[in-house]
Image: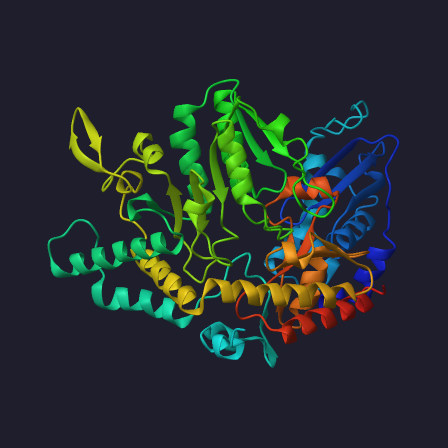
Length: 134
Length: 408
């Protein structure tokens, strides 16, 4: 079964960057109402507005959860502007398994969460309040 | 007992392979049923031979189309034992049935402080229209809770159902648990406080003999596509005096008697509620579905589903790590809802799909029910007159393989 290749099951069992950050420059949470997947991502930026720390938590299907591990691993050190332009194709390539239209939504939930969160940080500034969504 | 092999020949799609060399195991009839060839052919014949608009033309085709469309209404009336076919209103589906009552009866009859009583096991179709109405009118909504076994907890019914309750609406059969609710008892309890009582029969009419006069409900609604009929057609049944007093739901052609620039007068029921060109082929298809189900017999269908459900609950309970929801087979319709520990239902559905097995995964349009269960989704296998024990065995075997794949 291609879609459940070893790496997906590994990440489902042992997620990367799982947890939450004490202080974050932005954090955002959303669910996929179709299946009830939930993902929250916390990001802390450094002085150069690059990703210094990232953590995520949530629950849901293997695809959505593995995708969150892969995405958060990929964006470490990435500039805020690059987060905003991170393409869906790039994440799907990272996930690397053939997905139906319905399951693409599972895979892309983490990216949506990241980008809505990132959009709330308009101009890079060191004085942003924590967790602007709360 | 049903001759299931023979019945399976009636459904062309059951010969379709899910994947090359993998036969289809369709266990998602509660979402939508498959269609017997007689229904498909009746709709085809309408378009090929008598396609015309109804209630309008004087020409032969229009007359034949009208006759076929109205004959289907008669068949539906007899099928649910409605006193008269004028009490059978064509809608798109049960969802539209609820919306029609909410917008037409509800807006007209409910005021701030009035109460609507629902249950925590309702489908969104029997929740959201009332939420919209409650927001607009300041109506209060209360809910009957369910117990761990998926049956309603009626211990506090007297406190929930009071003289403030103007509408009591509940499902006859839960689309998640399969629970068969005590409809007659609940209708009588509602009438004891002078509430109008509406029944969601979307999961009842396809699977068991329903008699609206025996239930004594004021409104009842169901969808055609879950009972071997096409999509886009459903039924709202109502008691005559209520239908007569209600204002129209939508305005347009066919629902009027006379229109002047100053205003309009409404057509008689049921047409008062049927604005615009209706789903003619679908109505005819639904009538044929009623004929088909009647020819097999609703009691025989119900008995077969009881047998299959019993078999399924036993077979599935053998799967390690499974949690089954809902009452024992004796109290439930043909539904088995479950989760596997350590797996999301979407993953379960995706893996068994590769074995050709179609089951539903998600919240089944019953999010409040899942919130009460404390899970964000479940997997659901649902059965119909063509389901075999061999298909249940395939599901159980596939679930065991699914667990292995996830290293459980």
